[in-house]
Length: 218
Length: 138
Image (cartoon, rainbow over all chains, first blue to last red; front, side):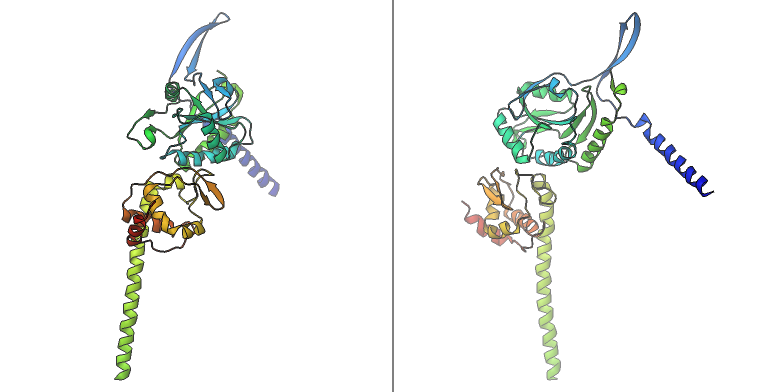
């Protein structure tokens, strides 16, 4: 009898596992999408084409050229900041450090912080900033590029940035952490100034890491 | 009769001392609570909810010895900002703090909060003290 109860419990446990393993807790895919019909091997196939992050050209804190391709094979988190930012950047990067610490040992998660003040944030300034944050290696890149191109790029991450002489530090920008999957699609957007949302981001990155390749193939 | 007078005197004196103390305490609490609100809106982004600072970029506010030894300069730092390299918790910081634009009474309130939170116990930093310190800013 005892064994029966025990095995029933085990079964229940397994069943519970199965339901929670169901793929309905996949992360959503953000941005515009369109249906594209094309002919493959004589058959008409309709595919959904999702919004993806376009190519960009930047330099990281080590002076190395970084493009969209440099992030191939990585899940990554992007944000927009500037080193002399007196308002929300310190709190954003205090929270981003938690993400960095959580994933610095797993090779497939990166963080990219685009500077929106490239005139001041030279490679040397970015390197100094990274050093002071205690960032080593290639898990967190601080990127500098053409200002207008970066502002345009921010739009594709669905983040608003702009110059404003009246704002503290001279720029206004949103403090979102944007989660990008290996297909360069936006899978989440989190308020980088809110520790609870950053905790959700860490959870979602782990979820994204377990997403099977077949489901993300475009 | 003599005993009664002594007793009444004694009670009066204790009451006076006691009310004095609670006045002081009330004053402290007024500074502290307003200072807490000011800290949240004006300082916390950089220095953190626990006064922890940010890595080697922004100094923490938990170094009681630094606060104690530099107590007379704190008002000027908050008012005018700070560019000098400083040592906090044994580590160098050479970033820049922007001027706060706070009024002297607000500086006193926020300093009272910081100096009695994050493990610090330095007591009231009155507006009179702040006004005096601001006269000799560099």
